[in-house]
Amino acid sequence: MSVDDAPEEGFVRDNKFLHPLLKFGFTAPRDFRLFNDQDGVLGVGRDHSLLFFSCTKEPMPGSLAEWMRNKLKPTPTDIQSAEIDGVEAAIGARPRGSDTGLGQVRYVMVRHGDQVCYFNLLSEGPDRDRRIEVLVAAARTFRTLSDAEAAALHPYRLRVITPNGASAAQLAQRLPYGDFKMERLLVLNGVDSAAELARLRKLCAEAGRDYAKMEISIYTDAGAGLSAHQVSDEAARKMVREYEEAGAHRMIFLARQPGNEFLTDLEQMARRFIAPA
Image (cartoon, rainbow, N blue to C red):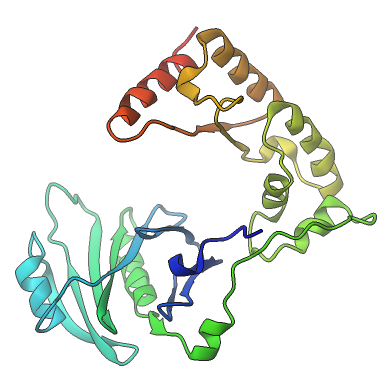
């Protein structure tokens, strides 16, 4: 059983994104967390700097710098032709204005075969000028993977084992992830309800972790196959109380309504689970 993205969507490995089929990769700054989706890769830094990466097969004849100058609106400033990993690239800055405030925004585009891959980079805060250069440097790590590198990439797969006396902390250290090892272990083992959260205190004690300082998020469809908007007001209040008492900090609901009905679903969930009783 795979517990990873599909190969055609690429893999996140700590602060790296690697695509085995399209044969490219890049490395984000070390403090970034990457989130992969079929539309692209979102990166979020500890200072809330943002990185978005994707690729398109939209034809872009001529130079990328000229395309950026003629097609992007508002027209970027300080557009530069460049090379990244030996292929054509272009870098530009979004003009500062009412929509950007004092934030720094950069666009980086690079050709990769018959596609053009691009980075949208945003940095705000007092360190924004230095930070945006760090993000541009990260975009410059974009490179083509060798055949051997691409062939070695495989999705993580779930393997059921017998603990044989190993503690939760020891089992967590065996996971291939670089962060949140204990939290990932708990999720993989189905700690996803108020009743099961009671087990966390014992596991945290074994691992030497402070239960009160753990950020616990619960993903729920409200049970019994119902989406959250179908739960009664009384049941919603009870569910919130149970999770709060168990130590959960955050509840994340699955919205099952398609299209524009999602907004109605969201409003109903807010009234039931957020509005005061």
